[in-house]
Amino acid sequence: MAIRHWLDLSSHFSNSKIKAVFSLKSYPTNGIEGRKSFSYENGFNPDQIIIPEQTHSTHVVLKNNSGGVKNTDGIFSSNSKCVCSIQVADCMPIYFVHKKDSVFGLVHVGWRGLVSGIINQCSKLLVEQKYNLAHFQILIGPSIQSCCFEVSEDVIDQFDPKFYEEKGSGKYRVHLQKLAMTHCLESGFIENEITVLSDCTFCEQEKYHSYRRNGKKAGRMIGLLGTK
Image (cartoon, rainbow, N blue to C red; front, side, top):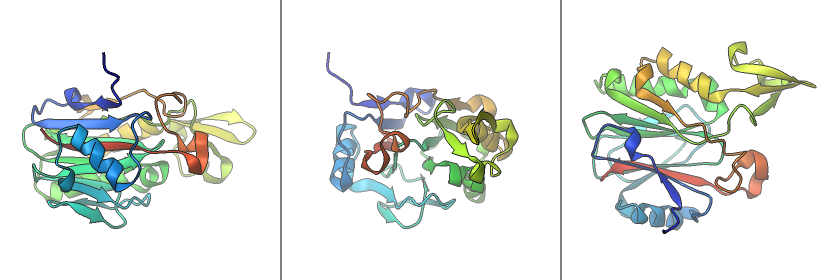
């Protein structure tokens, strides 16, 4: 049996036209060529990839042609030929998929973008484009969980106390996924259309890269989202 070097997340969505994947640590995804290779392996056209320059911003865009996008952490497209992409190494990869139409988005959500309102920006973008938020399904992919996401007193005030617990010695554990779920609901998405994966990128060191675990030398996982 061949070893699979990525997760196929497509089954989490009812739209049968959608292909959603997430690379594992065992798959080399360095640079543009790595991303193109991963795209090709999954049946996407490597020349149709949209690549955001991720800056932990709240900037999300609708883009219907391939290429790079400056200072952007979320890409949506209504062009079935396009392939949305992001890279992560602890931050949440959040997939948005319309249940019937070829409308989809992929968003890089770290704690800074989360507390600054990037999920609300996603809902605003879709509403501006005249889409009904109830028609979207959301998947929050592998990311650092509350068992390992620890912050100090210098930033804890940016989080609602409902989403963290004190560990002692001025340290706190934050549940980013619960906060992301709350922001999705507050932004108008439907609870039973949201799936949260429990894989912790920090804990599962054989499977995932982790910036918190390995620092600047950490690799990256690539998320891709498009149509079959």
